[in-house]
Length: 190
Image (tube, rainbow, N blue to C red; front, side, top):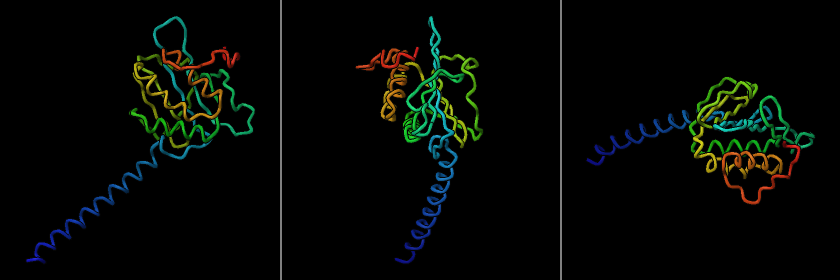
């Protein structure tokens, strides 16, 4: 009697372990394709854009990687893609990790797209976030009512003062509170 009940249990355990292994393998393969969870390299870039109805244009905010010794580090010139804050690779890795762990739903493609000119961006009712890396492109939209809550945790990704200042100023443009923000810290912003 004992052996009679033991056989189906062992078979069930073997089937469960085999199925679990398949799920784990499938999950590992998915993570390798996932743009936000893939290793971040110097080609990765993140762009935030939202244009509410109003009197002035809100330029996109872009984060790009440069070497620690590059003179562009801690600068944020206006380029064709938008206001471009140059940061270190570890900072972009932290930013991507923050985005990956947010509640945002991402559409991902293996196609590596160029950001292109901000003049060609579509104006929508939501903020658009685009991540481009060597592994592909990820896009999501963010309801404007959730901008403050969603973007505030990303502050912790930045050690570069200018990049942090740009992100905080970007949030201020949408009515977010940023205590102690110094509007005059970077006069070249305007």
